[in-house]
Image 1 (cartoon, rainbow, N blue to C red):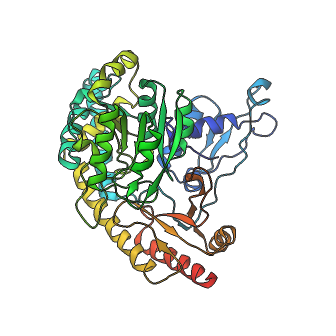
Image 2: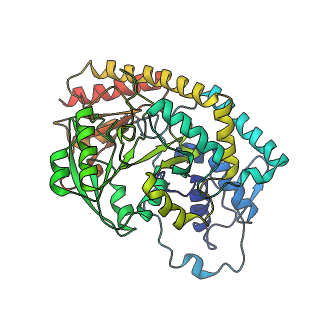
Image 3: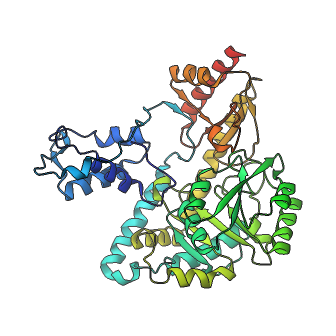
Length: 455
């Protein structure tokens, strides 16, 4: 029951749809669903996400509850055959729970931050009771939230923009979708290795894509000049997945190329909050004086991945096109959540959360570096930032390595699918933000032991 964390559809709705679609009148009646805790553990989501999905099923009559026993499918009479007859079945089962799971994109829940977020949500509910019209934002999102972002992005990333350039989105993928829908059809250059899902996303809006290699200095600018795509998607402050940083000289050269050829750069600043050996780098957009950069950011990694809230800063020349296409559409994110985020900003909780999160992830980052420094069988690729690290583990068969790690309840993630063309089978991603320090240390020691034995 895999969930697409890059989808603009909220996780609880994805789960609700899958559980609803899995109903089979021949076998499902009175069948017990997994407990909320077990489902959350298996899918790697919060219990709140599962609760929301189950409550939606309950409200629509697909399930019933037995106190102390959980949720069960109802016996639904006259179920139409067409509902399930031709539906493609999911072929992949959810990954089993793993104690030392180095998955990317999840964060350890910090209790003070979570309590502050719940307080912000409760305050938004109170505000809804007092004046509901303030919680129905337009397609761009809450003006108050966009104004907070203007200040936050200026002080933290050097981004210069107005509230009218900002769109509140369901996350980075939703922001990309919006941007691709506004742009004329053309060629999108994608870092290689990089976010391969962009290939399918771009194609759905009539764009073609081309892969551009990444060096230890970030995006290869010689290839950019040769290929000359209409749009470039890049992660200059912490290249995904390898972690390289595009130096200032290359940033200025890339911007000059975009100005000279009237091209657009999409800057995905996906985890800019986490830099451990120096101050956070200014965004590429902060250097842009010619309106050539669209800027993507997210709150999901700063608070919780299930929040699914991000933002897009449009170049000024695309604002009119955006308004023309989207002025009569509803906003992407519920007004209640946006007001909660406004409250989170206004009482200073967001900044306190980032400070706590940086501190704990800095400890985890140093622990990863310390453990990997004890072996020569694992080679870190780039260090100093982010909530993951890419490593190279050469001379070990990938299938055998993953199997041996699984026997020790350890899971790491090959990067084969991030490469266009011939994949490289000895690169792996280690996400460390979702593990507490004790679990992280044990998991790293298990990884080192397995790799050393195979050398």
